[in-house]
Structure formats: C-alpha cells, structure tokens
Image 1 (cartoon, rainbow, N blue to C red):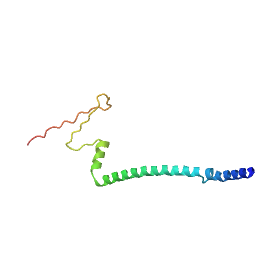
Image 2 (tube, rainbow, N blue to C red):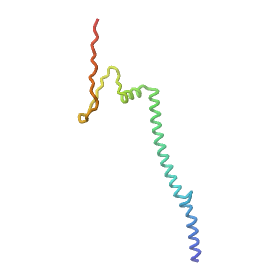
Image 3 (cartoon, helix red, strand yellow):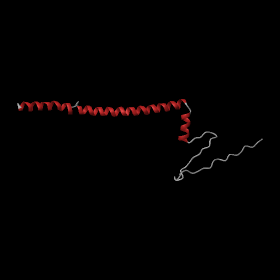
Image 4 (cartoon, helix red, strand yellow):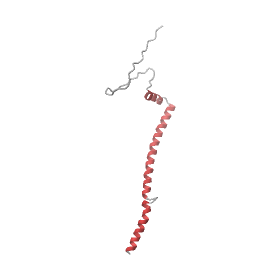
Length: 110
C-alpha cells in the first residue's frame, strides 16, 4: 500500500512539473503577463507623446501663436516696437557680452 502511495505521489509530481516549469507553465504565463503589462504601459506613454506632438503640429499648421512662441524662446526674436528685458541672477556669472542698443537718430523735419 505504501508503495502505491509513493508511486501516485511521484506521478502527481511528474504531472505537476510541466504545469509549473514547462514551456507553457504558470511561471512562463506569469512572466509573459508582466511583459504585456510593461508593453501596454509603454504604449500608453507613447500614445500620450504622439497626441502631444500631433496637437503641436496642428497648432503650427493653423495658428501663428505657436510659431511666435518658438521664435521668441528658441531664436530670441522680438516683435517690432517691443522692448527686450533680460533679468540676470546677480550671483551667477554671465558669459554674454553686453552690447549697447543701436542709436536711433531722429528724422529731420521738412
């Protein structure tokens, strides 16, 4: 009787081995689930990034506000008749050389 119980226990263990550690076992399924969750998270982040870029492209195509903003911040451009004011941190040493503004000569009256 004891031999039969040991044989049955061994058979149960042999049957359980592929279930837990085999090619399609529970551990493999759990690992694949974790990979799917990570891929879905990355896809969500990329979808949000794509939506942001798409809205920026639409704004650049349709409006002048985004073009003006980029020209101001990236190229340092200002509009005509605007005064550019730059506030510097007194504790930070500046590597820029200050250039005085051009002198505007008044037009002669006729």
